[in-house]
Length: 254
Ligand code: NDP
Image (cartoon, rainbow, N blue to C red; front, side, top):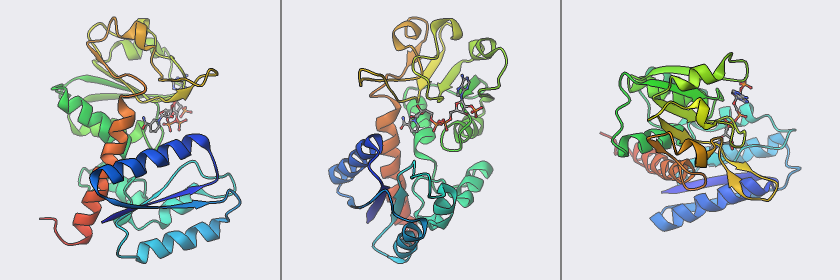
């Protein structure tokens, strides 16, 4: 079984993420290989590599680390990955399956959030769920997964009016906007569950989330820290997807 990670260029954050993914594979005994391509790699060169990996039976999962350099169209690259090897679950075919609720892979970060909720014994059914952010990789699929669990879901974004009024309604609040310490205690209902997806690097190089942890933890019933909350869950879900890919490709799924 194996995971292949492709990284293009030398973005330091991407390098950290790729290293964590490789380490997780090692810890679990999953083969991993990395293609570290220079920043001036052309789109066609990258697509040729992806097509080659699609045909390679020893490769179960293909992950192209985002963001890609500006001259490469991310959508074209994602659309070229074999959906059966798409362990990030970004291919439109997998996105569609998630919408319907009949899927093999879930996108790693939203799946990690759902796992945290489940393992904490929190029942989503009937709860007011507010998702801050509507990106294709976090906000939208997150909302869909909460909906599948019978949450009443509101998605907020940069044009949302009266944001504080909306977030204050949330029994479960998921923040994924990429703005350091944006969610303050006055935006959160007493006893809410707050999940912080954000990873922001401050000028002093420390990491922080989208939620003001120190203040919000005084009103929330449960809250995830950054680092050490959703981030490790994202990696765990990638490992799960890689195993699922291997099982499906080897006809072992019942
Ligand atoms: P994007 O930049 O793609 O999306 C950000 C979203 O937040 C957009 O929908 C945007 O709205 C919304 N937004 C921005 N500002 C505001 C605001 N002031 N009020 C309300 N909504 C706002 O980010 P991602 O979804 O890719 O990532 C979000 C965060 O999660 C980042 O910090 C990222 O680093 C982190 N992340 C963490 C992962 C993990 O493993 N823990 C994995 C992936 C991401 P609009 O659409 O209107 O522009």
